[in-house]
Length: 331
Ligand code: NAL
Image 1: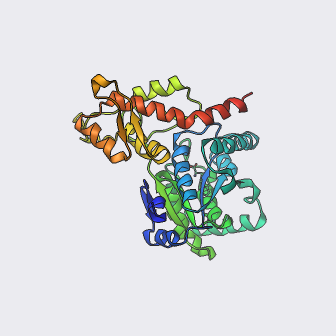
Image 2: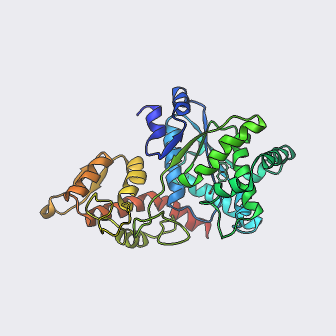
Image 3: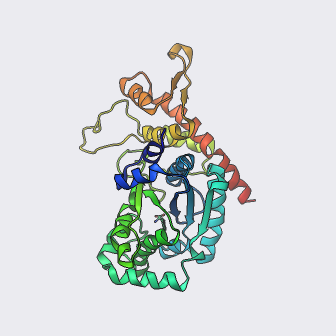
């Protein structure tokens, strides 16, 4: 795959395509970054953007992971001390997951976000931004109901980080897109360039396929799940043997989270998928491309139960090193 294809594989959108093509022309030494609010354990959403970081490392990018401790504090995730402690654990879990340590720069937000120059630039952005714009940018990120002043400051700091970390490509899930659009509009007011952005898809709710999987409600998958937790959760997943987006005719558009996890997690990391089946059911199926697996599920050649069995096996392999790391961290 060439650099452009590696950068844009499995993404929901890039802003703008022209800017991404320019980066793809000379990716070596270019800097890409994702920020994460530190939390105790990586979940499948963290792992999805991490897959993109791993692909970008293959394309020659330097990868910066911002452990956004101040942001987590502003978003009411705990005391500063608690958040800092989880940041270190999170970093170790990313490395266990497969981020190449020698090619990854981990930065703690508070290392630079409390400097005088940063704070003055932040205040300049505050002058340029309406409260309603900041609030809209945070709609899919903010925890709790009722926006706080802290939550209005949050997206402006996220914008400023792109400048202070000197990155060429800002990455996030689709829930980050309004923050990035705000950054593109606001940063020129402090004489900084509008950042190029890349947004990854969100996985649907595991049991219904409606709405987004969330670590705060419904079933979610994380690095601390045991092998049997994963089997149980994947078994309960919504996976109709059809491509009809509304198979129950209830007017709800549903995604197939089992297929999404194959597409966004398993194929990017393993390249090939083997679905084991007894000879009497046709024997093993081997896929070297996601589209073939999807087509077989939709034609009936691949039964949902067999797809789920294979998915649980691969997911378990993906999280096993991180699960081991978490076990060490707790001892
Ligand atoms: C992501 C987050 C916080 C700060 C950032 C700064 C620069 C780039 C990305 C960043 C966390 C993210 C979340 N908003 O919802 O977890």
